[in-house]
Amino acid sequence: MSIYVATTRSPDLKGLGYSDGKAPQTRFLEYTISIPPEHKTGNIEYPGPKPDVRSSFVVVGKRELQRQSFLAQVAAHGRKEAGVFVHGFNYSFQESLFRLAQMSADAQFNGAPVLFSWPSSATVTGYLADKEAATYSRDALSLLLRDLATQRFSNVIVFGHSMGGWLTMEALRQLRLTDQGKVLDRLTVMLAAPDIDVDVFRKNVETIGRLRTPMAVLVSSDDRALQISGLLSGDRRVGSLDVKDPKIAEAAREYNITIVDISELPSSGPMNHSRFPNLAASYRQLGVNGQPSGFRRAGAFVFRAVGTTVSSPFDVLSNVIAGK
Image 1: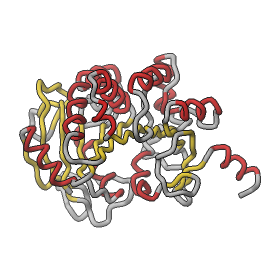
Image 2: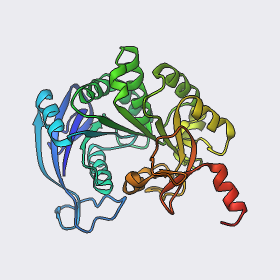
Image 3: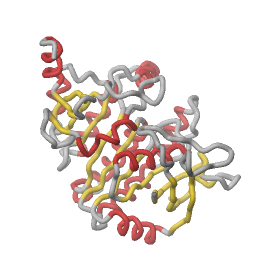
């Protein structure tokens, strides 16, 4: 699998990848990743000291590209669609690279998978440093989205997780403020567990305006990482909103946003902050209230693992009461 990378990280001094250093300019690369035959959906089979393509994810090819050749390669690979993954807080370069490979494989994604990797310190204690690193990367992400949207793609999916959701919103805001409305029209935006203050998010949405395709926000009210973030900052985080609150559904419709509670999905960590990798395999089959329309309708919904559909939380509640 080819993964295309735009990164604001500096090269690792050991030559093994990219570090948490801030690069003066965005670097562009193409990686070839081998996926093991017995890969388990939602999982990253990390390589050991002696990588084996039969049992683990392995980097089998890498080359650095200039910006224009990078865009040409992405356009040739993706044909009509590209998918950009903006990772979150506490991510190493390797984890972000393999995570995109895992999601692309599980979703059987036929477009061009593009990783935007910003210089996270990849430590639990590095929250403030990561916020500065994400801020440092806003211009680079805005430029990348503009470049991709002006290729021949009919759709550019932008998937931001956690602090990467905050970074994504900042880039969208910047595009709107620089009159890049045609770029925004080509984007399908999905935010998973976005680590954003609710009021800041609302102001950003007002600035960005209604997108042609409703923005999808994946939330879990039991997200412990965002609960801790909220306690530290003294505010509510978007990624832990409760879709059963009628005010949330009303606001979602007003701002043309799809808010989906994905609490039924298993989490890849104890903090319930990383459920999104398990959604990739169901992405193409998702429907709203039984209709195969994906995340295309504004409002608040609950993901149902059985049947891979999303339904109104009030429909779910009535079914529970009725014993269905």
